[in-house]
Amino acid sequence: MKDVRILGTGAYVPDRIVSNDEVGAPAGVDDAWITRKTAIRERRWAAPEQATSDLATAAARAAMESAGITAEQLSVIAVATSTPDRPQPPTAAYVQRNLGASGTAAFDVNAVCSGTVFALSAVSGVMLRRGGHALVIGADVYSRILDPADRKTVILFGDGAGAMVLGPTGRGPLVRHVALHTFGALADLIQVPAGGSRLPADPGALDAGLQYFAMDGREVRRFVVEELPQLVKGFLHEAGVGPEDISHFVPHQANGVMLDEVFADLSLPRATMHKTVTQLGNTGAASIPITLDAAVRKGAFRPGELVLLAGFGGGMAASFALVEW
Image 1 (tube, rainbow, N blue to C red):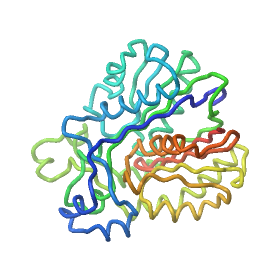
Image 2 (image 1 turned 90 degrees about the vertical axis):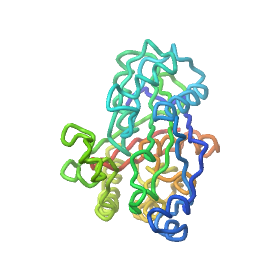
Image 3 (image 1 turned 45 degrees about the horizontal axis):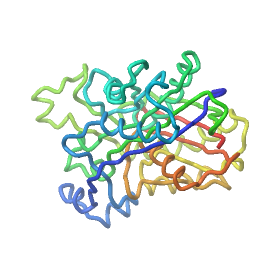
């Protein structure tokens, strides 16, 4: 990750605010139940005419403005998403077209909620070979794949996009270390069963509701609670820093109650955890860059501080990035 720096951040969330009462009614739960279980109070859902590429493009433009660059200066665009506009072409191709960035390589990364850090890692290597700047975007529109009656999932998710501009210049926060993990034995814990080559979204699959997002919440929580602390400990050791050196923790915004439990177990004694989950819910691959951008715009980070980004989710996967501000 040598010489890769974050030159700008940006985010976009749709205008429509969806309350706990609205999302909970079809699932048979109320605001108090949702808040107690998740600490989520509201989320944003995309308008009918908005697709993932639209949210991604808006976040990208905000990040490019923050970085002070134009589309002509980009060499690569990567969109981390598990809710693409279409199965093909890649959503990144639409973003490239929207931005007028015709000279770039553009591709998608699907590592579900860990995807943005996976994309950051992949793009850094491409960028260092090609030169120029890279645009990493996490974007998801989960509202389109949720079963309104499934209280385990429909209460959690919101739509949004976050972006980072990366560059090899001497200014900006330095990406010091990245680590990626996938636990394929647990791949079925989070899935959308229909719509791929294993099970096409034919009328029978649609009648059975197999086009919807499905999650074994109990086992997912077990994975996060049991695996994440050890993975973080190993990551910090690889990066050559101690837990006490971390000033800020920016995790995937899966569930506010679970985040508080996990953060207590991570033993990062000087770190501040940043959260957007209360107002935005779980925005999938977008949650880390959205939360990072919110912290940046609040002026939360000071020069020299270490920021730990941590993704986890479907695959099952986990991803970490250490950034020196």
